[in-house]
Length: 377
Image (cartoon, rainbow, N blue to C red):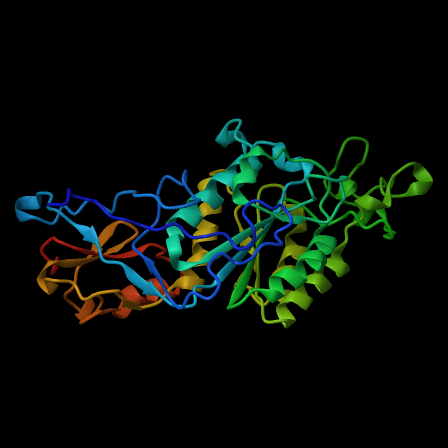
């Protein structure tokens, strides 16, 4: 008998060449007509290749006891592409917040991206790009890298948003299947050497950097006063770069992490340009709370909206329909009632308010688990 809580999840493959930071290699899943998924790795530690993390404990036996259970693999057809574009500028080395201790914003982003990808399992393909390019100067456009390189990167440089999205656009738009860009930043776009701005539009002044008082009068982006135009807020080109990707049919989700607050209005514009405005303020996904888990919450909300479905197709019909349960983020969902679920052959249908939770992005991990008596209420 299989031990309680056992499963055999399959981790997703990265898009592009895992060994090449330029991302010129093939899609590792190209040509697949369907993929089997039975859950993700909650540890977020093993993202390349296969692993065997546990399914939720199935404590649905008599008198609350634990019974044997196993994930029922789901057939995933045409999983979407998640294209992460991550800001690794110098300010990302700073702590997420005083309440979060010494954990940097960059380490938090790496951890939560790992967690999200592990939870998604084979329900999505993914690829990672960071900016600026770690191999070149502080304002070099970003590049695609293997996820295994993330933890070893040290934040440095500026925020070449427009140049990065323009450089990545051909790769983003060439991917097979539906693609979504998840763009995370902690500041305003800059690094445009042709820019010219007042103190009101200078990122150094906006952020009240040392010797750069907010709103001037000293303009830290003026060459005439010893400043650099690379610090000018590069708003219009960044909006145009996002719009170009969105016009190609690729939505761009915008996530603001701590210290992005002074640029909230611009991030709203970027979200609108990317076709992903939330419909209420802020229009982008703000993960600037003192608790770093706010980032995972924002990422999960976006991911759930993309992969969420109320109709789950299993690879095989469960051997005993009376011993099947559905789990929402690790919690069993009763079958009975208008907000429960139904099973017909290989099809599980989530009903009512429970379905709406999936569509609203409030539930990310939906599992079908066999072996324990069905929870009816």
